[in-house]
Length: 197
Image 1 (cartoon, rainbow, N blue to C red):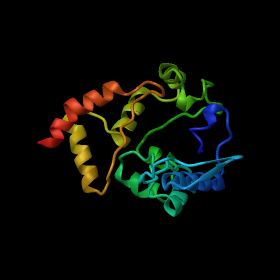
Image 2: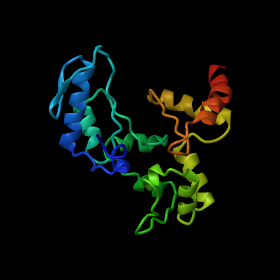
Image 3: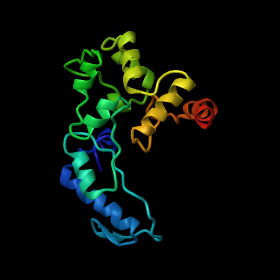
Image 4: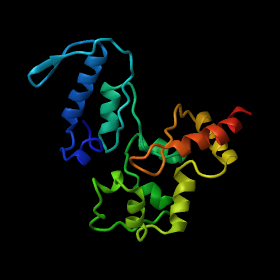
């Protein structure tokens, strides 16, 4: 169900109706109800109270999440005006341009397995895109839209986000298939102690 979870497997992205139906199936399963999967009827043995928060990008999916889910995961970064704007229109381009981030997007993106954003080799993806974004622009993007800097800077930014109403932050490392062990260790060992002061 979705786009980034199915396209790398060679499946077609879900339609809006398919996303709505898929979320209903998940909600029914979690409620202990029986559901049909083609010609098989099944249910979870134990009812589980889990809120549904689909990742929602594109112009309509945040609205769909608001209609049928308990919340949404927005890939919006940490710039305050971007967070406000992202709920209305999830295209990132105006904020990149406003922040001075200039990216030369090729007519045909580099071909990697299974695709550029889910590359099996993140190092290959970085090499394939180096000519489109220079180091200065990449750092500008990181400082403007990401948690970037020293442990004290990250803690200050997280505190600012909490005060502005952000209730959760997803930490994501560069890489598609490797577990973020170093990120988790660094955050736990360096940033959390600063946040506890």
